[in-house]
Length: 393
Ligand SMILES: *Cc1c(COP(=O)(O)O)cnc(C)c1O
Image (tube, rainbow, N blue to C red; front, side):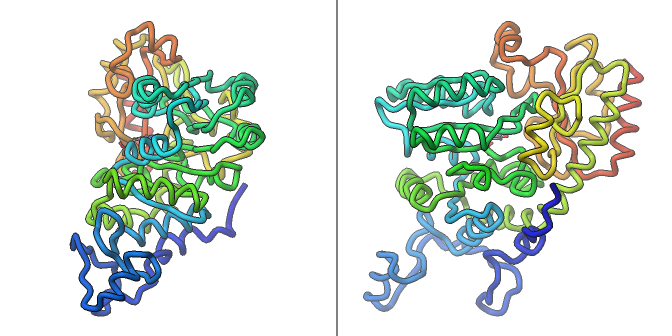
């Protein structure tokens, strides 16, 4: 499903940054100013009321942060976008805006660790009824949605086993009961998947990952229906999880190469997945681009590319993982993902370290699982590196 009409390369460069900028800069200046001054009281008043464009105070809006929101709005084909200090701030602010005592939310079990904590720890304390469903049992999810809910919360591909959730199917059911559909699109980015086109109302991102792409700034983004985004913006401008202008600049800079990077991430992950799939010491490879993947058909129908993330498990479980990882040269042994440099880590000691072995088993996370965020290096080097490391175990 090649998509050449979206002109992502051009939007990534120009959207939100058409200029002209003060003093003829050709890159957007970083506006560190916390507050913005007005000599004319009427003008000040109009800006404060939103009748005239401008900025008042950087917790609310800022001239470096706003162009980032505008660029993401264009890339996702959204009516509106806003930003946050981190991905978790985007997710928590969005959920807390819409979920109140007595409301019900239907979500999948395989959400990002932090999101899962919101569902199992914080929302129940606020007397929100949380229903977590088996990620791939779409029929069961539809049944739960049918019982009525305020929000349907999805994430796809999932972490760390790269399950693919059928967005159009579940969004259609959610529409029938008037629920708001939120999709965490962090793994895919708008280059590979645009949930708003697939029926979602809102899309959330950790901009810390592929959007920024260089592991040197944190941020969160929310895009979608204007009335809904405005509500979350209001919650965020009061509760204060605002994106710093310097981080906004870093993310804007990273976004300029988003399409180029994602094309390379996609290619590298596919080649690495194919190599691992054929390796005798590897027992399973989880990558939605492989025809053997459990929902390859759904991935193909809703994604333009399969992403830079994969995971694999080794014969010999965690002992084998402990032996393998120190031999890998071209991967940072670290948490996080979506950077230009490859990252590797076992979910057993990163995202799912707090679970017991039994809980990991229940969550479908093999003890010998390794998560691999393919960077933009040359794929032959990544593969040769994995090969020599596997030879040593
Ligand atoms: C990292 C991540 C988050 C949280 O983002 P932060 O920027 O670390 O707060 C949310 N969802 C997914 C899928 C992630 O990978």
